[in-house]
Image (cartoon, rainbow, N blue to C red; front, side, top):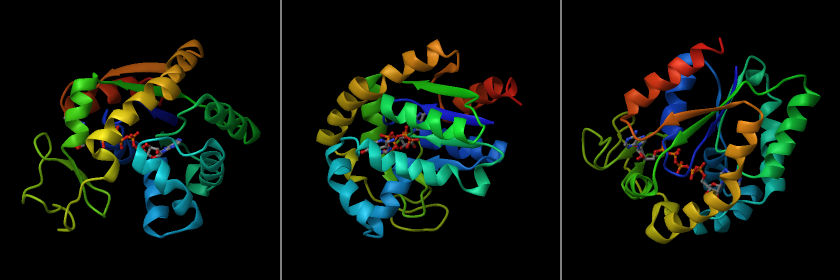
Length: 215
Ligand code: AP5
């Protein structure tokens, strides 16, 4: 099964992707995570991406297309994959289509997680991350010990783009550049709407029901 998780910043794509990946044994491909790893390792890609990301802007399409082409060519994607945070622009949609066609694959479903702006701002401003990749929320999904990861006991931090000004910009960028993809995938009859306002497990139950139709 080949899945795209679509939705605004903070909708809960990463949170749900982790659960879907475990439940369906699919590789979770998060372009945000790939870019952040490159920034941590100070690679040439990370150096290019850093300033765009800290301002809440999109990283140029050509860099993302190169990343996704390489990632989807790996053997763990041959039985299916789940994209989180890609595509985000129409050129990225077109490139994905070309990559899949060339390798005899197709998308099965696009899950669009819907959440209103007020809730998104609360989710993003309260998010805390661990270097091991686990994400928390100070109110909605707190760790057992404040400020520390339950899994690896690492110290939690706030993402640079989860500060107020970058959040505002990310929401503007999402509406301008990524929201048009909802129309695109609706026309292709691939889009399924997920009510993202519920709690984390209720949303996951909803997603599982939708995915049962694609086994
Ligand atoms: P990326 O890392 O993909 O960020 P994003 O899409 O903005 O999404 P987020 O990770 O902020 O949110 P999410 O929807 O995953 O929510 P989460 O589950 O964490 O991208 C970062 C940047 O990289 C971009 O801005 C761009 O610069 C660049 N980039 C990446 N991909 C790119 C591309 N394709 N093209 C160009 N540039 C690209 O949840 C958020 C919080 O809410 C957490 O604290 C969580 O615990 C909490 N939460 C989750 N679900 C619920 C719930 N149901 N109720 C209450 N709280 C909840």
